[in-house]
Amino acid sequence: MRSPLPVLATLLTAFVGLVLAAPAQAQTAPIPMRIGVIPVIGASPIFVANGEGWLKEAGLAPSFTTFESGPNMIQALASGTIDVYVAGVAPLAVARTKNIDVRVVASTAVEEMVFVAGPKLAPFFANGASKAEAFAQFKAKEGRPARLATQPLGSVPNTTLQHWLWQVAKADKANAEVVSMGIDATQQAILAGAVDGASIREPALTIVQGRNPAITLIANGAEMFPDQPGTVVGVYGAYADRNPGAVESLVRSLIRADTLLKSDSAKAAPHVLAALGKGIVDLATIQKALTSPAAKFTVDPRAIIVATKAMQAYQVSIGALEKDVPLDGLFDSRYYEKAIAR
Image (cartoon, rainbow, N blue to C red):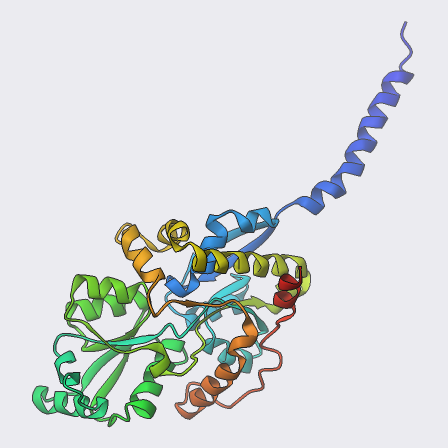
């Protein structure tokens, strides 16, 4: 009869092998990363990084949730529903005043917001008329202030619109009414003529002008708020502390995506279409939006610190922020610096 010892030895060897292999397998298991994002061209680097497979290649297991505005996403971040925030920088300053630990580890785009006027309002800006006078003439003719759509108070679209209206155009507040709504609703409202103007970003700019050429670009991003910080990547503090390697991998993937967007937007476009298309936008529209003057991509978070301070100060003046808060803990450029050093 065969001795059971060799069989036992074989089983023990196999068991030990499994035990020793387990830690290695655990180390290589993908790290979950729940990403909240607004559906705009400014967020393209995250879409491209995911579409090219670079996030998974870096050991991440990304999942995406779409939001209508940054302030709405802050609630999800605070409740632990998402780990990563990809939206405007302005709501993050508000979040920090409420003791929500979120850190900007990358920018994705700047000077995104532009102002467009609908068919009723646009003619008043013709022939070199001042912006303030255009709004005054509109009210005189229509008997009401121009209704201008944007996102909620505290968002980048709202902040830049108000800055342009009151500080740049110097419009009388009796001549313009700011109406808050979601991103999709803003696009629909300007197309339907339910509002007279709007602060929008790509791809909405390309979409609305393509469907109605009478919708006119009145002010670009640099005019609305010079060097305006746009979409950023913020990471919940506790997540960053637990997964520093994952955050660095995320930033490194964004840098690769930024390079592709600038060097070969045609290759990047299908990934952006997959994220934004919803079956109503075609590839040509996305390609045009990616090369629009309103699409300025940059990943370096250090490049927007000064402009973010200026935007925060303005938010205080319009009541979107209770007080000016230090930005010391908001920006964490270590991940970017490590990524570019490799």
